[in-house]
Length: 169
Image (cartoon, rainbow, N blue to C red; front, side):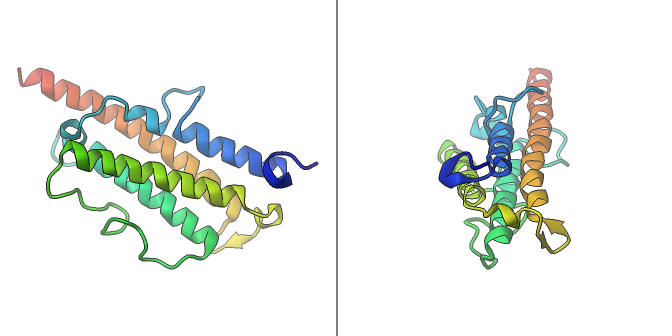
């Protein structure tokens, strides 16, 4: 039973919906990844409250990188085309200012849209095919789960940075 764009089957529609809910919401469980960034300044995004864990900014770049990685695995695109480096947890810009923060949020948005477009164009019969150890379906659902995992981390970091700010008064 064809539904959605270009006659895609309901699984493609569901996968796109899950990607979008995990990224932009609405979500029944709480704030989606993009929503956790609302109101976060560059200064706050770069903070590492205990000095050991990743910052909000680093998690944003990490999430963008893994959206790129899943897209690359689904399309067969070669490694090395991600806009930032090094891989997985790209380095923060030399100056963590408002402009750099907005650019990296735009990178996250762009990688989400690119992944979403690849998922929309998937042939339904590819969903159960293995690519390495995982099915194509697993990669897409994993990308949505990855967003939610890091949304939780970002919410915790926001609380910690608020506590650090309050304690330093």
